[in-house]
Image (tube, rainbow, N blue to C red; front, side):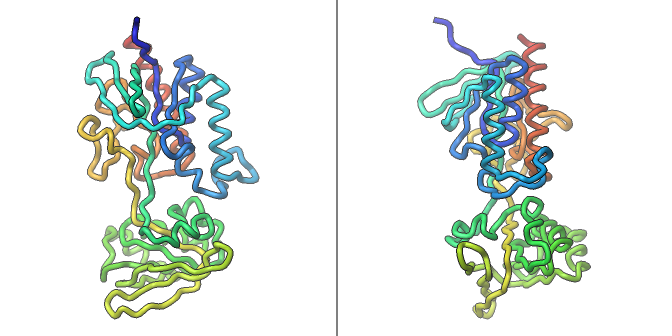
Length: 313
């Protein structure tokens, strides 16, 4: 019996994965998509999405992902609610890539990786409790909801500095909590922070708790780790800006990753160092990390896969 080798398998189900599926399906690649443990990706943890074109009244993250999935399925994308747990990629042009979902082996001519990145959190129980009620890991996504209010940003690197200066244009006051006695952001970003009048930096301060009514943030509980003195800051939003972890664990030692674990792609394409393997969305984009840029790169991945199949098979 001849083995069933699929033209295109998509790993991951955020905006990048489902956009890749829409384009691949319309190109008659008969894609099969594996959702992973978080169908819909990071957007399913976002309440209101107001910056994705085409939704004049906004939409919730979960609703938007359901719309994208329905659109992909309309063109006969096969969606599997399973997680790819292992991958063995061919290094040959025209080679067959092998994936596993548990004990099930899947063979594919092309693979589009859209496994995304996971925002790092501090690990406080309160972060989960107030998620969607004032705790966020994306100022660009959620900053608008805190217009004229006070917010806290937790972090000391470029991400924290960028989030803080972005928020400062919208909110009344930003307090940055920095664990050490210095910021490790670039000089240019530190300069921007120090030149923004409504940003206050609290060095040697850590977030240890969050308080509020009805799962809405009202106060940040902080500790001075030098004096052990605790205090409370009245705020409506708490932005955790300590970085993201790309979901690339199962691809290590096969695909070229950068120093932070993001997949390296050839600039201007979704191509990885392996023929027939493409990477799209946040798994290869540590800079923009937006639903719309992820969707755009998903389109690129499907078109690159279609071109590869046309040239090789």
